[in-house]
Length: 242
Image 1 (cartoon, rainbow, N blue to C red):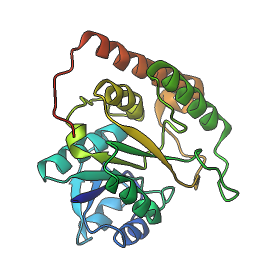
Image 2 (cartoon, one colour; image 1 turned 30 degrees about the vertical axis):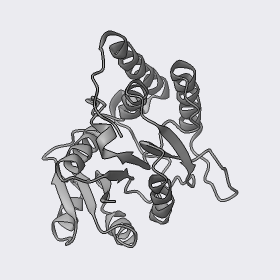
Image 3 (tube, rainbow, N blue to C red; image 1 turned 90 degrees about the horizontal axis):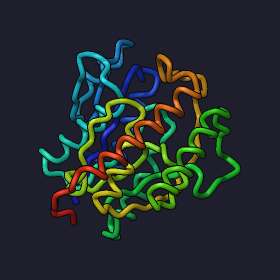
């Protein structure tokens, strides 16, 4: 199995070297997508050996970083790509758990869930984030027939050949709201595995009007409904998913 770990990065100079050091213990192929960092992260990455690097000249969004990661993995003939964040809220020591699920060859997307098996060591997310995640997860399940427990966890493994079956162009934080309907429409096999719930910085901003929880929830719902509607009018072609 040819495995790539892809890490979107934006202004993570505080964490990036520790995260990369930890990931290297579990996977030798690492792609970092620097989404226009301005805090010195770019200089750290420029001097880092042994990684693949995509640098956006300006901030293009979390979703665009993932879209670029999938395109790179496909072009370089990787079989699977694991995506994870760079703020130490995703534990690299969980990578073997994703690999075990991958090796079962039953799934196309293996999604981490912070709520599947709660533990006493879990952090408590801000109230608005918990409420939005719960609302969106329940809505996705009802609309798409899924059984998700965590709609927003970015710690995932994706079968590269399966990701060719979905047309993704949502560049911002609403990326998962496009991914889930597109994956269901393409018939991808989805499962969750537990990961620890960690919140190092509950005061992080989304930017612009998305910092308002009501605006954020409405935006997510709008993107989800638009993707579901797009699926009704578009006839998916056979993509040869494994």
